[in-house]
Structures are given as C-alpha cells and as structure tokens.
Length: 257
Image (tube, rainbow, N blue to C red; front, side, top):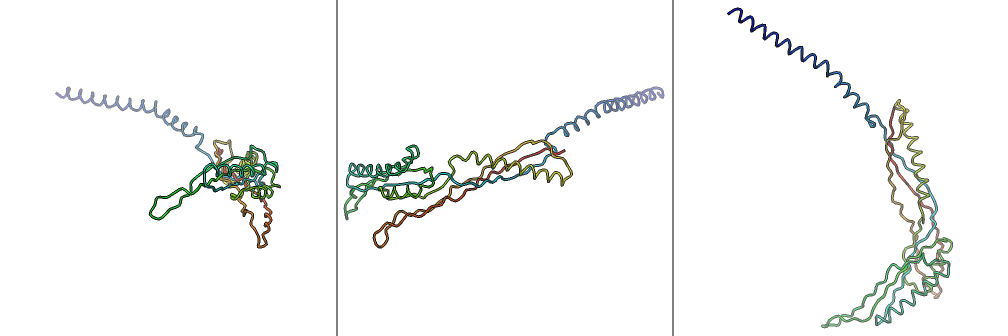
C-alpha cells in the first residue's frame, strides 16, 4: 500500500513538473515576439507625433466690377397696353446702357412680373381695374469709371426703380491663390516656432485643409434721381468702389521628429 501511494505521489509531482515546464517554454517562446509586435505597431503609426497649426492668408484688392439692378414699373388698363408700354420703356433703358459700352452678355433680365390691380366696391366682388408690369435687368459694369453714367442714363431712359449698387471681384481665383500662398507661409513659420519651443524638429506635412471665408460684396447706396425745389435734376453722386479683403484659412498637420 505504501508502494502504491508513493507511485501515485511521484506521478502527480511529475505531471505538475511537466505542466510548469511546458508553460515556461511556451511563455519564453511567445512572450518576446508578442511584446515586440505591440511596440512596433505603436511606433509605426504616422500620426503618433504630430503638430497641427491654423493660419490665415489675407489679400486686399480693389473691386473690378459693379453690379446694379434697373427696373421699369408700368401701369395700364389692359394686359396688351401695359406690356407694350413696359417693353418699350425697358427697351429704351437697355439701349441707353448699351450706348455706354455695356455688352449684351452683361445685361440679364431677372424679373418679368405682371399682376392685376383690384378695386373693392362696397357690397360687391373685387374687380380688376388695370395691370402692373415690373421688369428688371441686372447690369454688370466692367469699367468703374462709367458707373455714375450708367445709373443716370438708366433713370433718364425710364428706369423708375434702382436696386442697391454693389462692387465685387469678377474672377477671384488669382486673389485666392495669393491668399492661399500667404496662409501656408504663415502656417509653416508658426509650426517651426512651436517645434523649436518644444525642442523637436518639424517633419513632412501629413494633412491639410482649407476654409474660405465668406467675402461679401461692397455695397454703395444710390438714391434715384431726385428733383430740387426749382425742378432741376440733382446731380448723381460720385461713387467710390473702395477695397475688398480676401481671407482664406488653412489647417496643416506636420510630423515632428
């Protein structure tokens, strides 16, 4: 019985020894590789060490076009008479503008609105008492020296409503390119300063994005030709286009070393 117990005890001890030995062998075989793989995966990430900066590029320039709406509002008793009258008056306005050198491609019809006028007799249904016709053209003026002349000529020819005058840049692509170049230069300088202060070196550009701010047109108020007390026309005001600022913002991410 003692021999049987001793044999069982030795078998249990041997099994435990083999199990521990096997675990140690497996751990030594796999553990270093597992650790190294995790470490390599972390250090190989391209965004592990980065710096992101934002910067603006601003360019001030003068507008090169003016935009104005000229309208003719006509009233008459019948549809035929109001359309004939309105078309003739708008034709005179367009001809007057063209005589100043405005090309046909820069004159766009933007509104043609015909609607009836009603009277409201007592104890009776409303009745049509005539018609109103509103016609509008949008004029692009490329020569800013004739803005005053276009306004005066349009009103003299029959335009009885003048929309708000604005100044803008016809093709802003070149100005945007200048603003973009300035923004990238500013971003690089800012990133270099930050890297120096942090004691690191600036690496390659990882990613970047652009955000173009809204550039509103410049508005200039213009009152339609008025009459003074003597009945003479008040001269049109001198209109200055001023200047316009183009702003473009960027965000750039650099690697740091």
